[in-house]
Image 1 (spheres, rainbow, N blue to C red):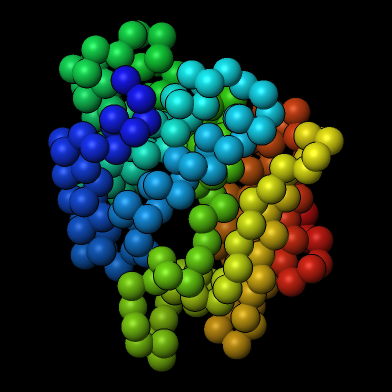
Image 2 (cartoon, rainbow, N blue to C red):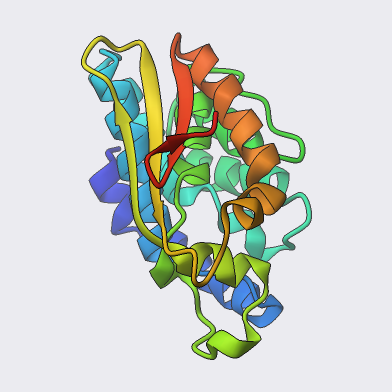
Length: 218
């Protein structure tokens, strides 16, 4: 089964919608189809650029698309509950055990609290997920009541994740409008994520660099 087929699976899409509704009720930023599709495509881009097999690229995309369904259960430990949900779904779709193992291991390790880049697919998922910072993830339309997560995401006017031609480094390049959030705000909530990104990059044989407003910070 392919990534494109997974995207049309109504059971999976229902869980993605319901998980995002749950996060909306908790005041979190957007985690719906825009987020999971972007994560899937970025994860695929990373492995494809580095020369991994076509099937490994597909598995990274599938992991990216379904990585956040555990938020339907609870935000706490959502990576682990999502991995268990993904196991049941993929098993019923007759995925081979080897592929199920790779996908659920990546999902179960994508959260910065407990995650480890245990495989190239897991590493690609981590980098793709943690680099999704953008203005249109903010649901709150009242700027005066923004919390720090709203401020940081809203301040990002441009985000790029690119691997260099020599395949030696992966760079997250952000443009931040400092009227809404500062570089210090970004590090206050994302430092742990950036450390995990560095570990994920190392798993892929890359160096991780973070650029904010043309200044290298990591």
